[in-house]
Amino acid sequence: MQAPKHPPRFLPTLTEVVKHPAPATESAEIPVLLEEEVLAPVVASTFVEPVASVMTDEDLIAKVMVQLTPVLEQVVQDALQQSLQARLHVLLPGVMEDVEATVSRAVADALQGVHAEQERQ
Image (cartoon, rainbow, N blue to C red; front, side, top):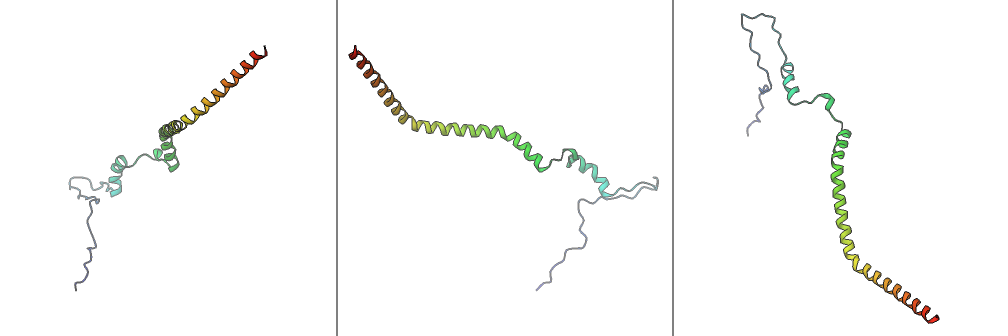
């Protein structure tokens, strides 16, 4: 049975800044920048938006709703229109029968009234 291998205590990473020694001709008072100071402008310009444009969850939800509301309203309106059209298509024959029966009764009653009036004269 083999003993478990332990990783080395120090692993180099790609995020480390290699500092070169200053040449002898330059002044000895060259400021040494920390890794964060060197990378901060690159990170800020590439990955981080300004603080003023950071949105809260509520702001993001409101913005998405403003954009989606017209689309959702149109989808709902189209779905309702199709549903109502289908329902009317099913109901139309029964409605037509009722209208026809009502008109027939109204015409028959009107003719009866006309005949009754003519007989009285």
